[in-house]
View 1 (spheres, helix red, strand yellow):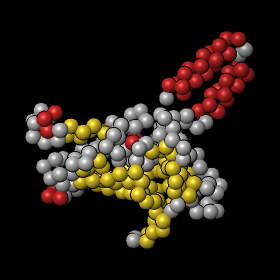
View 2 (cartoon, one colour; view 1 turned 60 degrees about the vertical axis):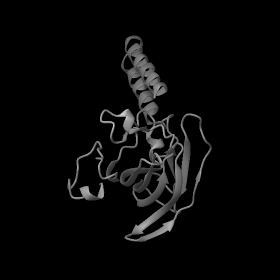
View 3 (cartoon, rainbow, N blue to C red; view 1 turned 135 degrees about the vertical axis):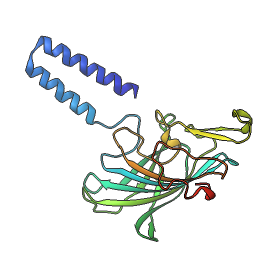
View 4 (tube, rainbow, N blue to C red; view 1 turned 90 degrees about the vertical axis):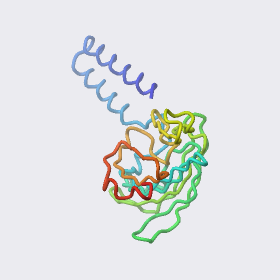
Length: 226
């Protein structure tokens, strides 16, 4: 985020100036200021990883070229960070969220109440999911989400066959930088909330899905378009 970068630059200049003017005591003070600044919330995200952080996500995605949408199911592994957080907040932008579930085990789930907060012109709309009461730091939850991307998703570029080199098949590519991941799936769209992930992606049989990930059991599901 540009504002965060400018803030960090200002702190660096302050530290350098303090070294010349006042010596070590002021240098230590400026470093403390920098540490506090880096620990504040990301101004480009509406999520709350300081209360409950998503540390792993398992995706199941259907790429639908006919409607130029992606239908998704995700299972989010959430770790509680603060005492008794009331909600898990995820960044979204234009997504249609169909349901949210608390997953207790294989084929066992319970609906989780959710709502959208106020829409921001640039940052999108926070998805607010109510958490169970009396959670403590370190507790783990698994949350299931089903959603659909809009045809206007800023993270997805759909090309017709005529726009490709081969002129035979359509093409899709995604671009999540700088804050467009929230237009692809509900997430904590900030560098401060890193996570691992795995994915199953279904595409038309004649096409291949590629991700920034290592294929698992490559070729096993080719007939299914996976």
